Image (cartoon, rainbow, N blue to C red; front, top):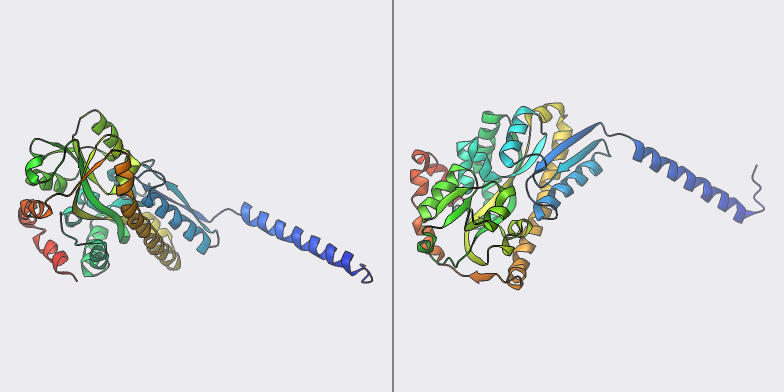
Length: 335
């Protein structure tokens, strides 16, 4: 029995015992295996806002589940390109993915509205629209067609701008220009209408395609351009603001069915909270990257945006027989 006439010794012993207990508990928690591991893929470079958003999502899920659910992320196309990730979720070989909304146009006609130029006025308009009835309509159609469950349609991917190997001020400057486009038909339709020669190139091949002059121009948000090294090979940036783009964070039906309702809600909320964090990173980067690009020798051009709008104004009425015209109008009228 420890005698109390030596209080300092007594306190030291107790402190030592508490430390040992804490270390033992921590070690046990560290060694405890999660009940499940979710695999999530995304196509953008490590360190970009989308990559950091996915990593924040992973941490939130692990923390809020008390370590029972682990999340393993596969950035920079490690889980395949975006089309392959969609197919993986359809088959159940990939649990989740953060993918640009427009890529879903390959499997769901309604998703082509995500790539309609000048559809969304700004990031807030995009978020309000896709978190409202329009977003619900698209999410339900996606689940019915593919089995994929959209956890969020409204992560802010960024506002897409145009870069080229020459200044682009009006649509006339696009004549004869080989324009890298996302391998989705709606992008081909829009940039052909704008006057360019659309050339589909997978994102992972973008830098080499620009470097070897397979294409002369491309369009992406500034943070994505930085991650891909675009300012090193395209020295003219035109601030066309032509597309306020979204990222869809989605889940396979296979995973959805394996989760308990409370786990689904935990994951959905983690997606939403990580999205707010990611969106702020994108907005901050858009403010700072213009100066960074200028320091890398990029010339910033202020184009005639109204001329671009007019040039592509009829595409919603003509693409795919005009089947998306009403959905486009719903987006335009959303407050």
